[in-house]
Image (cartoon, rainbow, N blue to C red; front, top):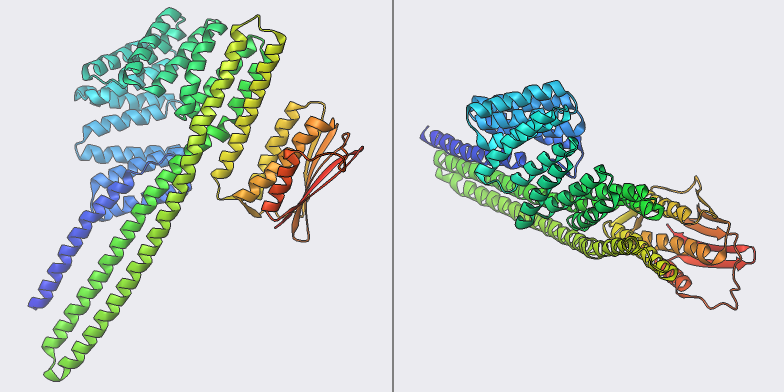
Length: 591
Protein backbone atom coordinates (compact mmCIF):
# COMPACT_ATOMS: atom_id res chain seq x y z
CA UNK A 1 0.00 0.00 0.00
CA UNK A 2 2.85 2.41 0.84
CA UNK A 3 4.46 1.79 -2.56
CA UNK A 4 1.15 2.44 -4.38
CA UNK A 5 0.68 5.77 -2.55
CA UNK A 6 4.26 6.75 -3.37
CA UNK A 7 3.67 5.93 -7.06
CA UNK A 8 0.45 8.01 -7.21
CA UNK A 9 2.19 10.98 -5.55
CA UNK A 10 5.00 10.83 -8.15
CA UNK A 11 2.47 10.78 -11.00
CA UNK A 12 0.72 13.81 -9.43
CA UNK A 13 4.00 15.74 -9.35
CA UNK A 14 4.64 14.87 -13.01
CA UNK A 15 1.18 16.05 -14.03
CA UNK A 16 1.65 19.32 -12.10
CA UNK A 17 4.85 20.02 -14.02
CA UNK A 18 3.12 19.12 -17.27
CA UNK A 19 0.27 21.53 -16.38
CA UNK A 20 2.77 24.42 -16.00
CA UNK A 21 4.32 23.44 -19.31
CA UNK A 22 0.87 23.40 -20.99
CA UNK A 23 0.23 26.98 -19.81
CA UNK A 24 3.46 28.06 -21.48
CA UNK A 25 2.42 26.21 -24.66
CA UNK A 26 -1.01 27.89 -24.66
CA UNK A 27 0.59 31.33 -24.20
CA UNK A 28 3.17 30.72 -26.96
CA UNK A 29 0.44 29.70 -29.45
CA UNK A 30 -1.67 32.75 -28.50
CA UNK A 31 1.32 34.95 -29.39
CA UNK A 32 1.39 33.70 -33.01
CA UNK A 33 1.12 36.60 -35.48
CA UNK A 34 -2.03 35.63 -37.43
CA UNK A 35 -1.63 38.02 -40.39
CA UNK A 36 0.43 36.46 -43.22
CA UNK A 37 0.77 33.02 -41.44
CA UNK A 38 1.70 30.53 -44.20
CA UNK A 39 -1.13 27.98 -43.72
CA UNK A 40 -4.80 28.04 -44.82
CA UNK A 41 -7.11 30.21 -42.73
CA UNK A 42 -9.23 27.18 -41.76
CA UNK A 43 -6.10 25.56 -40.31
CA UNK A 44 -5.30 28.74 -38.36
CA UNK A 45 -8.82 28.66 -36.87
CA UNK A 46 -8.35 24.97 -36.01
CA UNK A 47 -5.08 25.76 -34.17
CA UNK A 48 -6.74 28.36 -31.92
CA UNK A 49 -9.85 26.21 -31.35
CA UNK A 50 -7.53 23.41 -30.15
CA UNK A 51 -5.61 25.90 -28.02
CA UNK A 52 -8.91 27.15 -26.56
CA UNK A 53 -9.85 23.58 -25.59
CA UNK A 54 -6.38 22.93 -24.10
CA UNK A 55 -6.69 26.08 -21.95
CA UNK A 56 -10.18 25.00 -20.85
CA UNK A 57 -8.95 21.48 -19.97
CA UNK A 58 -6.31 22.82 -17.58
CA UNK A 59 -8.56 25.59 -16.20
CA UNK A 60 -6.37 28.37 -17.60
CA UNK A 61 -8.77 31.34 -17.94
CA UNK A 62 -6.19 33.85 -19.17
CA UNK A 63 -5.21 31.40 -21.91
CA UNK A 64 -8.88 31.02 -22.93
CA UNK A 65 -9.22 34.80 -23.23
CA UNK A 66 -6.10 35.00 -25.40
CA UNK A 67 -7.35 32.16 -27.64
CA UNK A 68 -10.75 33.84 -28.08
CA UNK A 69 -9.10 37.15 -29.04
CA UNK A 70 -6.90 35.39 -31.64
CA UNK A 71 -9.95 33.54 -33.01
CA UNK A 72 -11.69 36.90 -33.40
CA UNK A 73 -8.78 38.14 -35.51
CA UNK A 74 -8.59 34.92 -37.59
CA UNK A 75 -12.35 34.94 -38.29
CA UNK A 76 -12.18 38.60 -39.36
CA UNK A 77 -9.53 37.73 -42.00
CA UNK A 78 -11.91 35.03 -43.30
CA UNK A 79 -14.73 37.59 -43.52
CA UNK A 80 -16.74 35.70 -40.85
CA UNK A 81 -17.55 38.86 -38.93
CA UNK A 82 -20.34 37.40 -36.78
CA UNK A 83 -18.05 34.64 -35.43
CA UNK A 84 -15.28 37.22 -35.02
CA UNK A 85 -17.51 39.48 -32.91
CA UNK A 86 -18.72 36.56 -30.75
CA UNK A 87 -15.12 35.44 -30.06
CA UNK A 88 -13.93 38.93 -29.07
CA UNK A 89 -16.96 39.36 -26.75
CA UNK A 90 -16.13 36.02 -25.07
CA UNK A 91 -12.57 37.28 -24.54
CA UNK A 92 -13.94 40.51 -23.04
CA UNK A 93 -16.18 38.54 -20.63
CA UNK A 94 -13.21 36.55 -19.31
CA UNK A 95 -10.99 39.64 -18.94
CA UNK A 96 -13.87 41.33 -17.09
CA UNK A 97 -14.19 38.30 -14.80
CA UNK A 98 -10.44 38.39 -14.12
CA UNK A 99 -10.65 42.12 -13.29
CA UNK A 100 -8.40 43.20 -16.18
CA UNK A 101 -10.50 46.25 -17.06
CA UNK A 102 -7.72 47.85 -19.11
CA UNK A 103 -7.93 44.94 -21.56
CA UNK A 104 -11.75 45.13 -21.49
CA UNK A 105 -11.63 48.81 -22.48
CA UNK A 106 -8.97 48.15 -25.13
CA UNK A 107 -10.84 45.23 -26.77
CA UNK A 108 -14.16 47.12 -26.79
CA UNK A 109 -12.39 49.97 -28.55
CA UNK A 110 -10.70 47.67 -31.07
CA UNK A 111 -14.00 45.82 -31.68
CA UNK A 112 -15.77 49.09 -32.47
CA UNK A 113 -12.95 50.37 -34.67
CA UNK A 114 -12.91 47.13 -36.67
CA UNK A 115 -16.66 47.44 -37.43
CA UNK A 116 -16.50 51.05 -38.69
CA UNK A 117 -17.22 50.18 -42.32
CA UNK A 118 -19.57 47.21 -41.70
CA UNK A 119 -21.99 48.44 -39.02
CA UNK A 120 -21.36 52.06 -38.04
CA UNK A 121 -24.00 52.15 -35.28
CA UNK A 122 -22.51 49.09 -33.52
CA UNK A 123 -19.04 50.50 -34.05
CA UNK A 124 -20.07 53.64 -32.14
CA UNK A 125 -21.75 51.51 -29.42
CA UNK A 126 -18.68 49.37 -28.68
CA UNK A 127 -16.28 52.30 -29.02
CA UNK A 128 -18.31 54.30 -26.49
CA UNK A 129 -18.34 51.33 -24.06
CA UNK A 130 -14.56 51.10 -24.22
CA UNK A 131 -14.23 54.88 -23.88
CA UNK A 132 -16.53 54.94 -20.81
CA UNK A 133 -14.57 52.18 -18.99
CA UNK A 134 -11.24 53.80 -19.79
CA UNK A 135 -12.45 57.25 -18.66
CA UNK A 136 -13.94 55.92 -15.39
CA UNK A 137 -10.66 54.20 -14.50
CA UNK A 138 -8.39 56.87 -16.02
CA UNK A 139 -6.59 54.33 -18.25
CA UNK A 140 -4.54 56.94 -20.09
CA UNK A 141 -2.55 54.42 -22.13
CA UNK A 142 -5.78 53.02 -23.60
CA UNK A 143 -7.55 56.42 -23.79
CA UNK A 144 -4.95 57.95 -26.11
CA UNK A 145 -5.71 55.31 -28.74
CA UNK A 146 -9.46 55.16 -28.09
CA UNK A 147 -9.80 58.95 -28.48
CA UNK A 148 -7.79 58.79 -31.71
CA UNK A 149 -9.93 55.95 -33.18
CA UNK A 150 -13.14 57.62 -31.97
CA UNK A 151 -12.07 60.75 -33.84
CA UNK A 152 -11.68 58.64 -36.99
CA UNK A 153 -15.29 57.43 -36.59
CA UNK A 154 -16.41 61.05 -36.31
CA UNK A 155 -14.41 61.92 -39.40
CA UNK A 156 -16.06 59.06 -41.35
CA UNK A 157 -19.47 60.39 -40.25
CA UNK A 158 -18.58 63.90 -41.51
CA UNK A 159 -18.59 65.30 -37.95
CA UNK A 160 -15.34 67.15 -38.54
CA UNK A 161 -15.49 69.46 -35.49
CA UNK A 162 -16.04 66.46 -33.20
CA UNK A 163 -13.20 64.64 -34.93
CA UNK A 164 -10.87 67.58 -34.22
CA UNK A 165 -11.99 67.58 -30.56
CA UNK A 166 -11.16 63.90 -29.96
CA UNK A 167 -7.93 64.00 -31.96
CA UNK A 168 -6.87 66.94 -29.76
CA UNK A 169 -7.81 65.05 -26.55
CA UNK A 170 -5.77 62.03 -27.64
CA UNK A 171 -2.86 64.31 -28.54
CA UNK A 172 -2.81 65.93 -25.08
CA UNK A 173 -2.51 62.50 -23.40
CA UNK A 174 0.25 61.47 -25.81
CA UNK A 175 2.14 64.70 -25.04
CA UNK A 176 1.75 64.01 -21.32
CA UNK A 177 3.01 60.42 -21.68
CA UNK A 178 5.72 61.53 -24.12
CA UNK A 179 4.45 59.06 -26.72
CA UNK A 180 6.97 60.02 -29.41
CA UNK A 181 5.59 57.52 -31.90
CA UNK A 182 1.91 58.37 -31.37
CA UNK A 183 2.25 62.19 -31.32
CA UNK A 184 3.06 62.55 -35.05
CA UNK A 185 0.06 60.34 -35.93
CA UNK A 186 -2.24 62.68 -33.98
CA UNK A 187 -0.78 65.68 -35.80
CA UNK A 188 -1.32 63.90 -39.12
CA UNK A 189 -4.94 63.11 -38.20
CA UNK A 190 -5.56 66.77 -37.32
CA UNK A 191 -3.97 67.82 -40.59
CA UNK A 192 -6.23 65.44 -42.52
CA UNK A 193 -9.39 66.95 -41.01
CA UNK A 194 -8.17 70.49 -41.71
CA UNK A 195 -7.63 69.38 -45.31
CA UNK A 196 -11.23 68.13 -45.51
CA UNK A 197 -12.34 71.54 -44.21
CA UNK A 198 -10.25 73.07 -47.05
CA UNK A 199 -8.08 74.86 -44.52
CA UNK A 200 -4.99 73.94 -46.53
CA UNK A 201 -2.51 76.21 -44.74
CA UNK A 202 -3.47 74.67 -41.37
CA UNK A 203 -3.31 71.18 -42.88
CA UNK A 204 0.22 71.83 -44.21
CA UNK A 205 1.27 73.24 -40.82
CA UNK A 206 0.33 70.06 -38.93
CA UNK A 207 1.71 67.71 -41.57
CA UNK A 208 5.01 69.61 -41.37
CA UNK A 209 4.99 69.35 -37.54
CA UNK A 210 4.50 65.60 -37.84
CA UNK A 211 7.27 65.39 -40.45
CA UNK A 212 9.79 67.35 -38.34
CA UNK A 213 9.15 65.09 -35.29
CA UNK A 214 9.60 61.94 -37.40
CA UNK A 215 12.80 63.30 -38.93
CA UNK A 216 14.21 63.74 -35.40
CA UNK A 217 13.36 60.12 -34.49
CA UNK A 218 14.32 58.79 -37.96
CA UNK A 219 10.88 57.19 -38.37
CA UNK A 220 11.36 56.48 -42.07
CA UNK A 221 7.91 55.01 -42.76
CA UNK A 222 6.21 57.92 -41.00
CA UNK A 223 8.43 60.36 -42.95
CA UNK A 224 7.36 58.74 -46.23
CA UNK A 225 3.67 59.00 -45.24
CA UNK A 226 4.02 62.70 -44.40
CA UNK A 227 5.74 63.46 -47.72
CA UNK A 228 2.82 61.77 -49.54
CA UNK A 229 0.25 63.62 -47.41
CA UNK A 230 1.89 67.00 -48.13
CA UNK A 231 1.77 66.12 -51.82
CA UNK A 232 -1.95 65.35 -51.45
CA UNK A 233 -2.59 68.80 -49.98
CA UNK A 234 -1.09 70.41 -53.08
CA UNK A 235 -3.15 68.05 -55.28
CA UNK A 236 -6.32 69.12 -53.45
CA UNK A 237 -5.38 72.72 -54.32
CA UNK A 238 -4.72 71.57 -57.94
CA UNK A 239 -1.08 72.68 -57.59
CA UNK A 240 0.12 69.65 -59.54
CA UNK A 241 3.73 70.75 -60.09
CA UNK A 242 4.21 71.51 -56.37
CA UNK A 243 2.96 68.00 -55.47
CA UNK A 244 5.53 66.12 -57.61
CA UNK A 245 8.68 66.64 -55.42
CA UNK A 246 6.92 65.35 -52.29
CA UNK A 247 5.77 62.17 -54.03
CA UNK A 248 9.30 61.61 -55.33
CA UNK A 249 10.69 62.05 -51.80
CA UNK A 250 8.26 59.47 -50.43
CA UNK A 251 8.68 56.85 -53.17
CA UNK A 252 12.36 55.79 -52.58
CA UNK A 253 11.69 55.40 -48.84
CA UNK A 254 8.57 53.26 -49.32
CA UNK A 255 10.44 51.10 -51.85
CA UNK A 256 13.46 50.60 -49.59
CA UNK A 257 11.33 49.79 -46.54
CA UNK A 258 8.99 47.58 -48.65
CA UNK A 259 5.95 49.60 -47.50
CA UNK A 260 3.80 48.16 -50.31
CA UNK A 261 0.53 50.02 -49.67
CA UNK A 262 2.23 53.43 -49.69
CA UNK A 263 4.31 52.47 -52.75
CA UNK A 264 1.16 51.58 -54.68
CA UNK A 265 -0.50 54.83 -53.62
CA UNK A 266 2.54 56.94 -54.61
CA UNK A 267 2.59 55.39 -58.08
CA UNK A 268 -1.15 55.99 -58.45
CA UNK A 269 -0.89 59.64 -57.36
CA UNK A 270 2.09 60.29 -59.68
CA UNK A 271 0.12 58.78 -62.57
CA UNK A 272 -2.82 61.09 -61.75
CA UNK A 273 -0.57 64.17 -61.48
CA UNK A 274 1.10 63.57 -64.85
CA UNK A 275 -2.32 62.86 -66.36
CA UNK A 276 -3.51 66.29 -65.16
CA UNK A 277 -0.32 67.81 -66.67
CA UNK A 278 -1.03 66.04 -70.02
CA UNK A 279 2.24 64.09 -69.76
CA UNK A 280 0.96 60.81 -71.19
CA UNK A 281 4.28 58.88 -71.14
CA UNK A 282 4.97 59.49 -67.45
CA UNK A 283 1.31 58.93 -66.53
CA UNK A 284 1.34 55.55 -68.32
CA UNK A 285 4.67 54.53 -66.77
CA UNK A 286 3.56 55.22 -63.20
CA UNK A 287 0.21 53.54 -63.81
CA UNK A 288 2.06 50.40 -64.98
CA UNK A 289 4.22 50.53 -61.85
CA UNK A 290 1.06 50.83 -59.74
CA UNK A 291 -0.49 47.82 -61.53
CA UNK A 292 2.52 45.53 -61.13
CA UNK A 293 3.72 46.47 -57.65
CA UNK A 294 1.59 43.74 -56.06
CA UNK A 295 3.49 41.07 -58.03
CA UNK A 296 6.92 42.53 -57.26
CA UNK A 297 7.47 44.41 -54.01
CA UNK A 298 4.51 43.00 -52.07
CA UNK A 299 5.23 39.34 -52.87
CA UNK A 300 8.87 39.62 -51.75
CA UNK A 301 7.92 41.15 -48.43
CA UNK A 302 5.19 38.60 -47.78
CA UNK A 303 7.50 35.69 -48.67
CA UNK A 304 10.17 36.98 -46.26
CA UNK A 305 7.63 37.33 -43.45
CA UNK A 306 6.13 33.91 -44.15
CA UNK A 307 9.56 32.24 -44.29
CA UNK A 308 10.58 33.80 -40.97
CA UNK A 309 7.31 32.70 -39.32
CA UNK A 310 7.64 29.18 -40.74
CA UNK A 311 11.18 28.83 -39.44
CA UNK A 312 10.14 29.96 -35.97
CA UNK A 313 6.98 27.83 -35.91
CA UNK A 314 8.60 24.62 -37.23
CA UNK A 315 11.57 24.91 -34.85
CA UNK A 316 9.30 25.36 -31.82
CA UNK A 317 7.07 22.51 -33.01
CA UNK A 318 10.02 20.09 -33.31
CA UNK A 319 11.34 21.07 -29.89
CA UNK A 320 7.92 20.39 -28.33
CA UNK A 321 7.76 16.98 -30.06
CA UNK A 322 11.20 16.08 -28.68
CA UNK A 323 10.16 17.08 -25.15
CA UNK A 324 6.92 15.08 -25.37
CA UNK A 325 8.65 11.95 -26.67
CA UNK A 326 11.32 12.13 -23.99
CA UNK A 327 8.63 12.53 -21.32
CA UNK A 328 6.78 9.47 -22.62
CA UNK A 329 9.97 7.40 -22.68
CA UNK A 330 10.83 8.48 -19.14
CA UNK A 331 7.34 7.59 -17.90
CA UNK A 332 7.51 4.14 -19.55
CA UNK A 333 10.97 3.51 -18.12
CA UNK A 334 9.77 4.51 -14.60
CA UNK A 335 6.72 2.26 -14.89
CA UNK A 336 8.85 -0.76 -15.88
CA UNK A 337 11.31 -0.14 -13.01
CA UNK A 338 8.55 0.05 -10.39
CA UNK A 339 6.74 -2.96 -11.74
CA UNK A 340 9.87 -5.08 -11.62
CA UNK A 341 10.73 -3.81 -8.14
CA UNK A 342 7.26 -4.83 -6.88
CA UNK A 343 7.57 -8.31 -8.43
CA UNK A 344 11.09 -8.74 -7.01
CA UNK A 345 9.80 -8.07 -3.48
CA UNK A 346 6.79 -10.40 -3.83
CA UNK A 347 8.30 -13.51 -5.45
CA UNK A 348 10.79 -15.93 -4.06
CA UNK A 349 14.52 -16.13 -4.54
CA UNK A 350 14.02 -18.60 -7.38
CA UNK A 351 12.38 -15.94 -9.54
CA UNK A 352 14.82 -13.13 -8.73
CA UNK A 353 17.44 -14.08 -11.35
CA UNK A 354 14.81 -14.42 -14.10
CA UNK A 355 13.19 -11.11 -13.23
CA UNK A 356 16.53 -9.33 -13.13
CA UNK A 357 17.33 -10.72 -16.57
CA UNK A 358 13.94 -9.59 -17.87
CA UNK A 359 14.47 -6.15 -16.33
CA UNK A 360 17.90 -5.76 -17.90
CA UNK A 361 16.57 -6.89 -21.27
CA UNK A 362 13.72 -4.39 -21.23
CA UNK A 363 15.97 -1.58 -20.06
CA UNK A 364 18.38 -2.23 -22.91
CA UNK A 365 15.50 -2.43 -25.38
CA UNK A 366 14.07 0.88 -24.19
CA UNK A 367 17.51 2.46 -24.24
CA UNK A 368 18.14 1.32 -27.81
CA UNK A 369 14.71 2.58 -28.85
CA UNK A 370 15.33 5.91 -27.15
CA UNK A 371 18.74 6.26 -28.81
CA UNK A 372 17.17 5.43 -32.19
CA UNK A 373 14.42 8.02 -31.69
CA UNK A 374 16.92 10.69 -30.64
CA UNK A 375 19.08 9.90 -33.68
CA UNK A 376 16.08 10.21 -35.99
CA UNK A 377 15.10 13.51 -34.39
CA UNK A 378 18.65 14.90 -34.69
CA UNK A 379 18.70 13.95 -38.38
CA UNK A 380 15.31 15.59 -38.97
CA UNK A 381 16.37 18.78 -37.16
CA UNK A 382 19.65 18.93 -39.12
CA UNK A 383 17.70 18.59 -42.37
CA UNK A 384 15.26 21.32 -41.37
CA UNK A 385 18.15 23.60 -40.32
CA UNK A 386 19.90 23.08 -43.67
CA UNK A 387 16.69 23.83 -45.60
CA UNK A 388 16.08 26.95 -43.50
CA UNK A 389 19.63 28.21 -44.10
CA UNK A 390 19.26 27.68 -47.87
CA UNK A 391 15.92 29.49 -47.90
CA UNK A 392 17.34 32.35 -45.80
CA UNK A 393 20.27 32.66 -48.23
CA UNK A 394 17.95 32.83 -51.26
CA UNK A 395 15.73 35.40 -49.56
CA UNK A 396 18.72 37.48 -48.47
CA UNK A 397 20.11 37.58 -52.02
CA UNK A 398 16.72 38.43 -53.58
CA UNK A 399 16.11 41.08 -50.89
CA UNK A 400 19.54 42.66 -51.55
CA UNK A 401 18.86 42.70 -55.30
CA UNK A 402 15.47 44.33 -54.77
CA UNK A 403 16.41 46.80 -52.02
CA UNK A 404 19.69 48.00 -53.54
CA UNK A 405 19.50 47.60 -57.32
CA UNK A 406 15.70 47.94 -57.67
CA UNK A 407 15.52 51.08 -55.54
CA UNK A 408 18.51 52.62 -57.36
CA UNK A 409 17.02 51.93 -60.80
CA UNK A 410 13.69 53.45 -59.74
CA UNK A 411 15.57 56.48 -58.41
CA UNK A 412 17.30 56.83 -61.83
CA UNK A 413 13.93 56.81 -63.63
CA UNK A 414 12.52 59.38 -61.20
CA UNK A 415 15.63 61.56 -61.65
CA UNK A 416 15.32 61.42 -65.46
CA UNK A 417 11.62 62.41 -65.21
CA UNK A 418 12.60 65.32 -62.94
CA UNK A 419 15.27 66.43 -65.46
CA UNK A 420 12.78 66.37 -68.33
CA UNK A 421 10.20 68.18 -66.22
CA UNK A 422 12.58 70.75 -64.71
CA UNK A 423 14.31 71.88 -67.95
CA UNK A 424 11.92 73.08 -70.65
CA UNK A 425 14.70 73.98 -73.15
CA UNK A 426 16.22 70.47 -73.49
CA UNK A 427 17.26 69.76 -77.09
CA UNK A 428 15.54 67.01 -79.05
CA UNK A 429 18.74 64.95 -79.22
CA UNK A 430 19.28 65.12 -75.47
CA UNK A 431 15.58 64.41 -74.84
CA UNK A 432 15.77 61.29 -77.02
CA UNK A 433 18.89 60.19 -75.18
CA UNK A 434 17.15 60.61 -71.80
CA UNK A 435 14.15 58.66 -73.11
CA UNK A 436 16.47 55.83 -74.25
CA UNK A 437 18.15 55.72 -70.83
CA UNK A 438 14.74 55.67 -69.09
CA UNK A 439 13.48 52.85 -71.37
CA UNK A 440 16.66 50.81 -70.84
CA UNK A 441 16.38 51.27 -67.06
CA UNK A 442 12.72 50.19 -67.11
CA UNK A 443 13.66 47.06 -69.10
CA UNK A 444 16.41 46.32 -66.57
CA UNK A 445 13.83 46.53 -63.74
CA UNK A 446 11.58 44.04 -65.57
CA UNK A 447 14.50 41.61 -66.04
CA UNK A 448 15.49 42.05 -62.38
CA UNK A 449 11.95 41.15 -61.33
CA UNK A 450 12.11 38.01 -63.51
CA UNK A 451 15.38 37.00 -61.83
CA UNK A 452 13.95 37.59 -58.32
CA UNK A 453 10.82 35.66 -59.31
CA UNK A 454 12.93 32.62 -60.29
CA UNK A 455 15.19 32.87 -57.19
CA UNK A 456 12.21 32.77 -54.83
CA UNK A 457 11.05 29.42 -56.24
CA UNK A 458 12.70 26.02 -55.93
CA UNK A 459 10.40 24.75 -58.68
CA UNK A 460 8.37 26.50 -61.38
CA UNK A 461 5.01 24.99 -62.40
CA UNK A 462 3.76 25.06 -65.97
CA UNK A 463 1.02 27.43 -64.74
CA UNK A 464 3.68 29.86 -63.36
CA UNK A 465 5.59 29.76 -66.67
CA UNK A 466 2.41 30.21 -68.71
CA UNK A 467 1.39 33.26 -66.66
CA UNK A 468 4.87 34.78 -66.95
CA UNK A 469 4.97 34.32 -70.74
CA UNK A 470 1.45 35.78 -71.11
CA UNK A 471 2.47 38.80 -69.00
CA UNK A 472 5.58 39.35 -71.16
CA UNK A 473 3.57 39.13 -74.39
CA UNK A 474 1.05 41.62 -72.96
CA UNK A 475 3.93 44.08 -72.35
CA UNK A 476 5.19 43.43 -75.89
CA UNK A 477 1.75 44.28 -77.28
CA UNK A 478 1.81 47.61 -75.45
CA UNK A 479 5.32 48.35 -76.78
CA UNK A 480 4.48 47.67 -80.46
CA UNK A 481 0.95 48.54 -81.52
CA UNK A 482 1.55 47.67 -85.21
CA UNK A 483 2.41 44.02 -84.47
CA UNK A 484 -0.21 41.35 -83.71
CA UNK A 485 0.70 38.74 -81.06
CA UNK A 486 -0.81 35.34 -80.37
CA UNK A 487 0.00 32.83 -77.60
CA UNK A 488 -1.43 29.31 -78.06
CA UNK A 489 -1.15 26.15 -75.93
CA UNK A 490 -2.49 22.87 -77.30
CA UNK A 491 -5.01 20.97 -75.18
CA UNK A 492 -2.84 17.84 -74.85
CA UNK A 493 -0.09 19.75 -72.99
CA UNK A 494 0.39 18.47 -69.43
CA UNK A 495 -0.09 21.67 -67.39
CA UNK A 496 0.70 19.88 -64.11
CA UNK A 497 4.36 19.44 -65.10
CA UNK A 498 6.93 21.07 -62.77
CA UNK A 499 10.23 22.52 -64.02
CA UNK A 500 13.28 23.32 -61.92
CA UNK A 501 13.77 27.07 -61.40
CA UNK A 502 16.82 26.97 -63.77
CA UNK A 503 14.90 25.15 -66.55
CA UNK A 504 11.83 27.38 -66.21
CA UNK A 505 13.93 30.57 -66.31
CA UNK A 506 15.92 29.38 -69.38
CA UNK A 507 12.71 28.55 -71.31
CA UNK A 508 11.28 31.97 -70.44
CA UNK A 509 14.50 33.77 -71.50
CA UNK A 510 14.63 31.93 -74.86
CA UNK A 511 11.02 32.95 -75.65
CA UNK A 512 11.75 36.51 -74.50
CA UNK A 513 14.88 36.79 -76.70
CA UNK A 514 13.12 35.34 -79.78
CA UNK A 515 10.18 37.77 -79.47
CA UNK A 516 12.51 40.74 -78.86
CA UNK A 517 14.59 39.83 -81.96
CA UNK A 518 11.41 39.66 -84.07
CA UNK A 519 10.35 43.09 -82.79
CA UNK A 520 13.76 44.73 -83.29
CA UNK A 521 14.97 43.30 -86.62
CA UNK A 522 12.22 41.46 -88.51
CA UNK A 523 9.67 44.27 -89.10
CA UNK A 524 7.02 41.62 -88.53
CA UNK A 525 3.27 42.21 -88.70
CA UNK A 526 2.49 39.05 -86.70
CA UNK A 527 4.37 37.08 -84.02
CA UNK A 528 3.12 33.73 -82.69
CA UNK A 529 4.18 31.66 -79.66
CA UNK A 530 2.88 28.07 -79.80
CA UNK A 531 3.41 25.31 -77.20
CA UNK A 532 2.63 21.63 -77.87
CA UNK A 533 3.63 18.20 -76.52
CA UNK A 534 4.86 15.30 -78.67
CA UNK A 535 6.67 12.06 -77.85
CA UNK A 536 7.56 13.09 -74.29
CA UNK A 537 8.89 16.52 -75.29
CA UNK A 538 7.60 20.08 -75.17
CA UNK A 539 7.70 21.87 -78.54
CA UNK A 540 7.90 25.65 -78.08
CA UNK A 541 7.86 27.52 -81.41
CA UNK A 542 8.17 31.29 -81.97
CA UNK A 543 7.38 32.40 -85.55
CA UNK A 544 7.08 35.73 -87.35
CA UNK A 545 6.23 36.89 -90.88
CA UNK A 546 9.10 39.40 -91.05
CA UNK A 547 11.94 39.93 -93.54
CA UNK A 548 14.09 37.09 -92.13
CA UNK A 549 17.87 36.84 -92.48
CA UNK A 550 20.49 34.86 -94.40
CA UNK A 551 21.67 32.16 -92.00
CA UNK A 552 24.68 31.18 -94.14
CA UNK A 553 26.11 34.71 -94.47
CA UNK A 554 25.07 36.20 -91.13
CA UNK A 555 27.32 35.95 -88.08
CA UNK A 556 25.28 34.87 -85.03
CA UNK A 557 25.18 37.54 -82.29
CA UNK A 558 25.26 37.13 -78.53
CA UNK A 559 21.47 36.80 -78.37
CA UNK A 560 21.19 33.72 -80.65
CA UNK A 561 24.30 32.11 -79.14
CA UNK A 562 22.89 32.61 -75.63
CA UNK A 563 19.60 31.01 -76.73
CA UNK A 564 21.44 27.90 -77.95
CA UNK A 565 23.53 27.78 -74.79
CA UNK A 566 20.41 27.97 -72.59
CA UNK A 567 18.80 25.15 -74.60
CA UNK A 568 21.86 22.90 -74.08
CA UNK A 569 21.87 23.63 -70.31
CA UNK A 570 18.37 22.14 -69.92
CA UNK A 571 19.01 19.17 -72.24
CA UNK A 572 17.02 20.63 -75.10
CA UNK A 573 17.67 21.52 -78.75
CA UNK A 574 17.14 24.77 -80.64
CA UNK A 575 16.41 24.97 -84.39
CA UNK A 576 16.36 28.28 -86.27
CA UNK A 577 14.93 28.58 -89.79
CA UNK A 578 14.72 31.88 -91.67
CA UNK A 579 13.69 33.04 -95.14
CA UNK A 580 12.28 36.13 -96.78
CA UNK A 581 8.83 35.00 -95.60
CA UNK A 582 9.77 35.00 -91.93
CA UNK A 583 11.69 33.27 -89.14
CA UNK A 584 10.92 30.23 -86.97
CA UNK A 585 12.65 29.38 -83.66
CA UNK A 586 11.80 25.86 -82.37
CA UNK A 587 12.81 24.76 -78.84
CA UNK A 588 12.44 21.07 -77.92
CA UNK A 589 12.58 20.34 -74.17
CA UNK A 590 12.31 16.81 -72.68
CA UNK A 591 9.67 16.50 -69.93
